[in-house]
Image 1 (cartoon, rainbow, N blue to C red):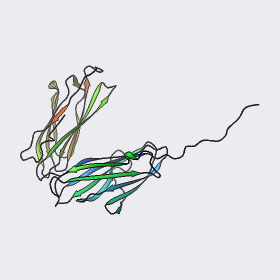
Image 2: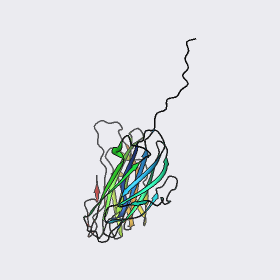
Image 3: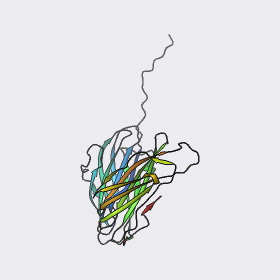
Image 4: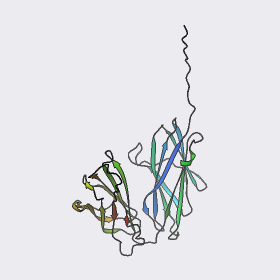
Length: 273
């Protein structure tokens, strides 16, 4: 009998690999206003691990709170109080399983004596229970600039490909970055030639009402936003189908814009392509 049975087991040692991202969510970006960030962290390790998040608070900002984002355990509940170490806030956030992520909001107040055009570079770092195999994505920073007091709106846009690259999904965001409410906003999205509206838009709107004008015969959705309060935002979602999916060397350009307000402090971001 030449059979050999090996009854041992090879177990790889723990390998830690965490990633963190940070982005501006909303806020009134004026002296005396506030900034809300979203921090998202993910475990790419081969083992579950405890998580340490370290947030560095720049001069001119004051931490006011943090809470878990939607669609997860603890939604809208506050994070445990961080430990303050100099200008850093440190959270111990418990075990995170393999291939899972969590995200939360962090709110900062802006010093009323800050000058317009001040830029706040704000960074966050993630760490697991051991040295990270890919430390290049352990730190994420976001730079936010202040504007003079007054009305100020901004539009942004993002897209995804769906249904085997035969459909484009768009997310449009309208921000009020100023310290005054704005009324009667008109937001116009012109979707690409060679596409057709797949559905009616949906939206998350924080203040006032929204009416939608269907001008899809001219490849447009027009949103009439009754009001938008300082620091608030609205998001609009819709899909378009490609008339000729898979056509090579074809570009699809979507534009979104809102008119410049009287006395607007920055009109360079009222248009996005």
